[in-house]
Image 1 (cartoon, rainbow, N blue to C red):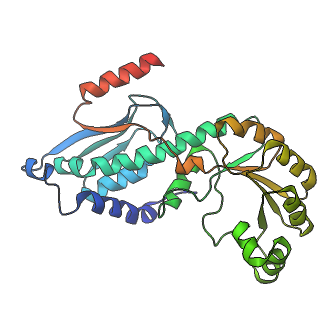
Image 2: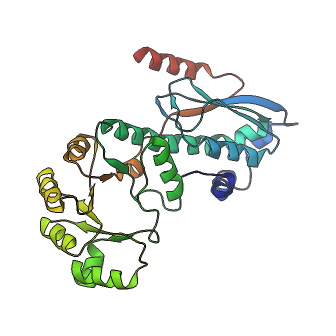
Image 3: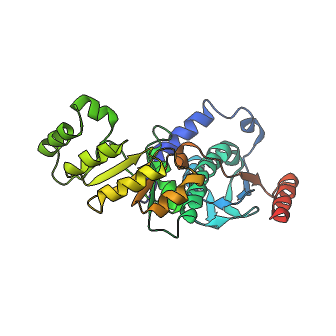
Length: 295
């Protein structure tokens, strides 16, 4: 998955509209002749950087003549004090873009960093890690991009590009078999069918219907182990539901094909990112020094 300016431009515009409103009532009165200034965006933490194009586009929308130098790229591991971008722009630009540009980077870097942590935990197995659709409405594409930057894969993007039969579908259809029969008759023949199974009986019924993907939904380890025996390689298997750092390794070692994790997009700690005009401020330098000493 790749992003480009055409895809992100409306998102950046919306962020700036939210930030600027009717105008900057602090910086707008202070810039005078609006001289050109220099500054940098840098990190005060450890993580995987993501969202640089969003920051770049934010700057360029406010000051089309701004010069932005990228010192790292999305996916790079950074440490306290790493400068991400150097900026040369009008003084008013720094006031207007600071929060919006930093928010894109810190939130997306938080997703990429968390994702990388999970990827590293199970890198000794053959499991494929994916996200879910849990997260920020209207920004799913952006979150899924950050997951890819962190080294994992994407699950479905929306209701269009996958047949995923869940509990409410089964209630409406009257069970697994009638649901699968309807879908086989009506859905595009190129789609695989995945069924969310909460019990081993559901796994067996889905297999009897010839589904291509079995999801073990909120099952414990023993249930998944038995489920894998039932499947016996006849379908792809996915583990999902409440998976976290303490549970992911034993699940991966069972031999499931896919693990989907909602936490990497819906519960994220942002990377600490700052912007300073001219030199990095003394308090930030002290923070960076303490973090480096602690490491």
